[in-house]
Length: 215
Image 1 (cartoon, helix red, strand yellow):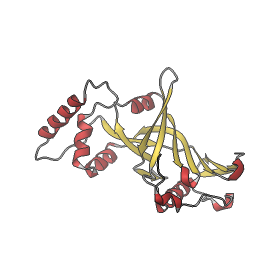
Image 2: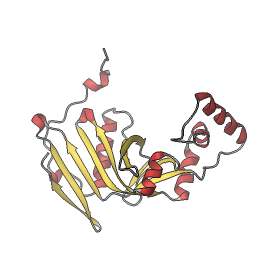
Image 3: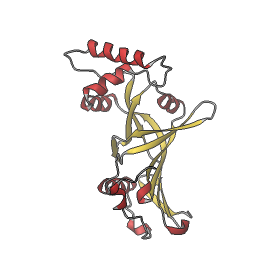
Image 4: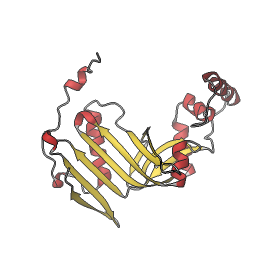
């Protein structure tokens, strides 16, 4: 039987109602506040988010990635191989949805908006901050392509390791940031008996309109 981590017992479930006036008028600031509280509660990888894409045939897919930057000026940025399925699908169909889910705190945040490539300067700056092993891994992986064996992948990694021996690992042209520019945010907080609290922010030029939704 799976055990529950001791620290989970110390996290209280949300029982207080959430009122509109308690939310920050800036949805970016509200997102950061909830992420900060989740981190303070001891939840791991509070920057983990699901990214949704859609294929040419209409088939949707999701995957978890790590948010690396969040601001009103630059949007939500994560990094990936531009040859990956998610990057290719976002290239064809830029509209996407992000989801942060903090189950123990009974909270989730959904963000909708178009995606675009981050600037080369942003990608190179972040790549330079990564551990060397991760940099080498980015070069070695043909992300989302068929791999005949684990050994082939390890051989590619060793070849890249030899190629860049005793020198800095440059950022590959096929690797970089994806920026999601929010058009709407939804903040959901669980309550007993499914009487949840749910609020949506919608962009209105340079401001954000806020409304409560039925749960």
